[in-house]
Image (cartoon, rainbow, N blue to C red; front, side):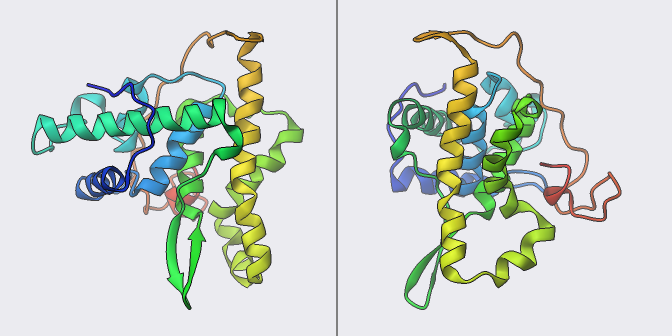
Length: 233
């Protein structure tokens, strides 16, 4: 059912994936292609190998047995799953073989005739992928600045400050996200390599625990923040 291709998805294929995310959205699901791209990037960049049977349900925050319950047909789900796997393979290939060519899929809006890149959804997806993959707490302190370059765009406490930035500074911060993702991928890849060309798989993968609250509900930790901007990370 899953695609082995690593060809980048074309616009029609991306629009289909995005349409399915919207069509079957839940309160705690990934909402668009940008968030999905960040999610998949973190999964292929982290310390643990996570099977599709573990992370695919996490797109919808549902149990695997319920994953296709409400799909209109098997063909629709099969195409979606195949394209998601193909996109994941494409990200792996870019990060492994052409690291400098890696490009995140950010949301875009037109403002005063200019195209503005909006990284918030991608960054939220990245942190969500980290949570599913697990093991990121072992990241050395010297690499935390790269994680911060991504996470700052999901921090509700920084939202007002980010809005006050001038456009040049804002673009500089957005421009730091993709290099940060490349560096984080490179670090964990090195940890998974015993010798050049020899891949040592991690001893186990981490199971995904289904959230019991919606992404816009108050976080159960009592912080007062929305779940999507607190413990969902």
